[in-house]
Amino acid sequence: MRLKDKVAIVTGGGSGFGAGIVRKFIREGALVLVADIDPQAAQGVAAAAGPAARALRVDVTRAEDVRLMMDAAALHFGRIDILVNNAGMGHKPQPLEELPEDTFDRIAALNMKAIYLAMREVVPRFKAQGGGVVLNMASTAGVSPRPRLAWYNASKGWVITATRACAVELAPSGIRVNALNPVAGETPMLATFMGEDTPEIRAKFLSTIPMGRFSTPEDLGNAACFLCSDEAGLITGVCMEVDGGRCI
Image 1 (cartoon, rainbow, N blue to C red):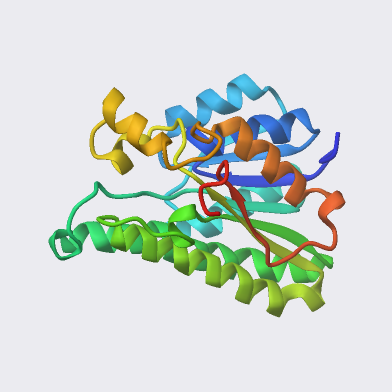
Image 2: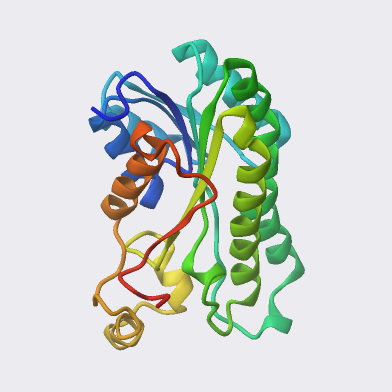
């Protein structure tokens, strides 16, 4: 029960890594707002988690939605202790000059601006209560970029830098800010990263991971639980690889 009675918001909590984080947080005693642009997905995860979870449809690229998300968590659970900025998107492998502008704009909005909007709302609340924890979902793509994913790589590099910058600035206020760098995982985004999901492409991708497997929602849930718990009380500005050795 490392998160007993802690109140957490998990964006993109309706599937993939976000759902894994929600499940782990619930098992460790947290109360969780499952925020997702897909209300049915969010409700499914929340229903399976039980009465300690609540679902909310949120477009994290919209300032008003983000503000309402914070208000809903505080109103329903009484406070906010943990914010997990997990929502994000990728793009199919392609030459960098061929990515459509509207896709670039969507990546920038979801992978970068959404974190800005969430921090703008949650930091004053954390400062007022004397502390809090933020966990951002970055990627090994921001550490060791792969060709043909240039703009996704760049967006996750931004998340890593933003995490470190926020950690340094907010440390005196008792606010910790960390990130996770997963390798590609068994989530709905896997086919997007590979371009096509075939046994041959999977084998080629797995050959770059020393431990020989993709990351799982459970892997990310376990890492997130540690970084958001009091056990990590002196850890801030860390961008932890959960990648089976991919970035070595």
